[in-house]
Image (cartoon, rainbow, N blue to C red):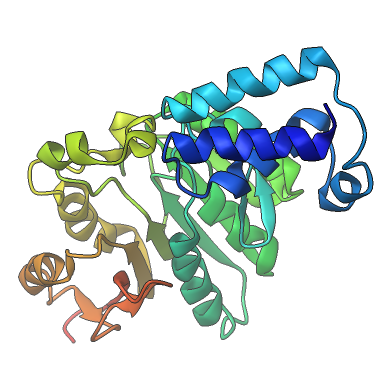
Length: 288
């Protein structure tokens, strides 16, 4: 069987199982197993595929049908135009999180001196690594409670050649964090505990600890808004990714702390789907 025929069968199998984006996933999987980029895949589309590769392809297709994310098979996800390693120990980076990175990069343009950025709950490190890659004069501190996640973040820093601008800290939120930062950024767990069971099967394959935001989904936002003030430099920024339906809830948390912060984003920055996605706060000066 040649590559073109095998791709067609793979697409049909995924479509029959009602897998979303069946053609794209079937193609990316086959390209991965054949170690070919898009151009090579076109050039060699009529080349015969070994029986061993055919069987492996069928096995991996079945894993996708059973709910395993393609990214955990290929160990790769693109984010901000960069390639990142991912596996079952970290969340799969989503395009909407790019909105947070772009918001930070926009504010960073005005900085004239070196600054420190804290990426809290870093996971695979995509936020901190992307900022380090695309901004000058910064040092990024990447922290997480998962040692396995930090290993992956370190791998991604090296893969994207920013390891000299990165420091990794094993910490439960702020417990092991020292110093002050001009920017604290975070995409914390924010799914309500009871809602996790109703998530798509693919999403439920991702680490529970990285999804679970507590009963109301706000556990980590409470900690961050309570504590970040002490770790921000004067006029420092706190940039948070939020769930699509959490704007008003987080506003209420902010109201309790408005003597500490100014809400920069009167309305949250929208994601690619038009949903609320990013809120930005700035530390107020004392007695202001």
